[in-house]
Image (cartoon, rainbow, N blue to C red; front, side, top):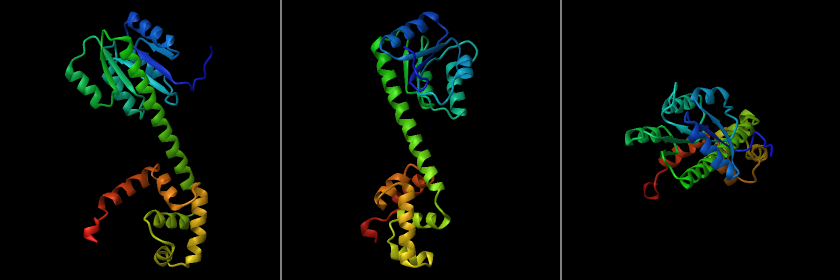
Length: 223
């Protein structure tokens, strides 16, 4: 059955043809779309970052090894979940791989179920990451439609300030603030300020700002 390139794919890089073929057969038998390479260089040359999925990556490879390939993915801004496999794995290598962002580390020979469980977790993580990026892109696009004044009003609203205070700080009438507020909510695709705050959390600038404000907010006893 022909599949769309948008279907999640398990990408496999292992120079051992027996291991590579066994993984392909196992995953395809479970209905997964699979593509395989014998080298990290070949995978990196072919991979389109827009394609969802996960990567099963051997540590010891001819040419570029797995840990270097992991670093290259990070350098390119690709956060494809990585599952490392190795027949020569040791604790320091596993720690280094996980610290660099690997999801898991399996030592050969590994059981079929262990591979399937890792792949399920990796594909789930990839879906979550892509969903978050889509939400962030949508919010950034909506924020970009705001006028400078609407942007100012939104900033005040997400700080929890009421219309009267916003009007005073922006030196305009309360009615003007109400008009801008309505436009902000409409453009951001929300019905109220609570929804607005939750939505802008997907925007990197506002996420950091709101997180910082939350940390700095004084306790009730300090007010």
